[in-house]
Image (tube, rainbow, N blue to C red; front, side, top):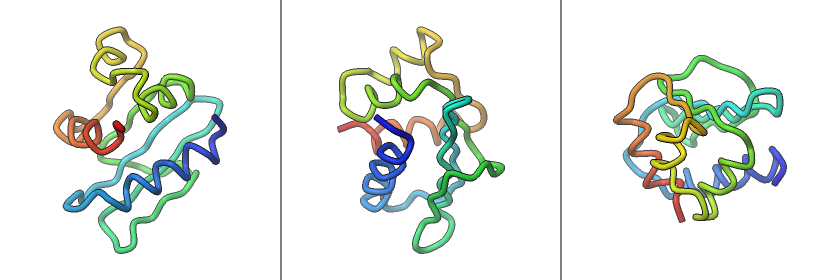
Length: 100
């Protein structure tokens, strides 16, 4: 899945996520990133690198698995495939939003 496809999928899922007011970055290393700012309406979603409250770092393949349900984010975190910087509570909220 390309960065553009991942960005589109995140945009769809965030549209259904009510009550989330934070800045989140999904960092895919050299493959790019997706920045989501839900503190404004409508949420800003871009591929620009901005400061965030929470950053999730993983490969595009791992993140694609999380989105399509073949990779449990908790297992990915325990195996070191997913790294979290910032609020763990916010990361847990994202877990329920992103999973299918």
